[in-house]
Amino acid sequence: GNSVTQMEGPVTLSEEAFLTINCTYTATGYPSLFWYVQYPGEGLQLLLKATKADDKGSNKGFEATYRKETTSFHLEKGSVQVSDSAVYFCALSVTGTYKYIFGTGTRLKVLA
Amino acid sequence: DTGVSQDPRHKITKRGQNVTFRCDPISEHNRLYWYRQTLGQGPEFLTYFQNEAQLEKSRLLSDRFSAERPKGSFSTLEIQRTEQGDSAMYLCASSKSGGGVSYEQYFGPGTRLTVT
Image (cartoon, rainbow over all chains, first blue to last red; front, side, top):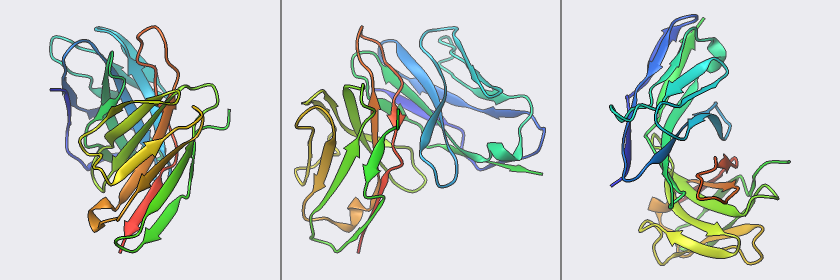
C-alpha cells in the first residue's frame, strides 16, 4: 500500500541553524510528493512539490528533492527563522487516485 | 480567488446528535476532498468528488457519514448519531483536474468538531 513516514518531532533549533526533516514513502506507481506547512491557528498551506524523480521543489528557502532510489523527499532549509515555527507535513499523491496520503507531521520550534 | 472556506469553524454537539458541515471550494476547481485530522496526526482521506460525482470513499467513512456535492460547487458532510470518536478537525480541499495529473490541493481552515 501507500504510506508516508516522517521523522518524529518536536525539532527544536536555534535561529539560523540548518534544518532537515526526513520523509520516506512507499507507493505503487509514480507518486507526486508534497510538503505542506501548518502555522499555529492556520490551515494547511502548500510549501513545495515535486512530480517526478530527481525534481527539486523549492519555496521560501526550503528545498526537497524527489529521490526515487531511496524513496525519500527530505525537507531542508539552510537558515531557519523564528517565523518558520510550525508543523510540517509530507504527503504523496498517486496518479489516478488523487487523494493525499500524509505523514504524521513534524513540529518545528525555532528559538531566537 | 478567495480560497477554500468552511462553515462552521467550530461545532460542539452532544453525542447522538446530527451535524452538517459546509465547504465552498475555489470556484474554478472541479475536485473537492474531505479529510479528517485528529490531534498529533496527519490528515486522513475521507472522500472526494469530481464535479458532482463522488468517486472514492475511504473505509473510514462509516454509514453514519454522508457527503454531497449536488451542483458541483459547494459540498456538505453530514455525520449522523455522533460519537465521541468523531471529535476531530474536518478539512476540505479543492484542486483542478485534467490530464491525469495530481494537481496540488488547497485546504480550507477546517471545522473543529467536539462531541461531548
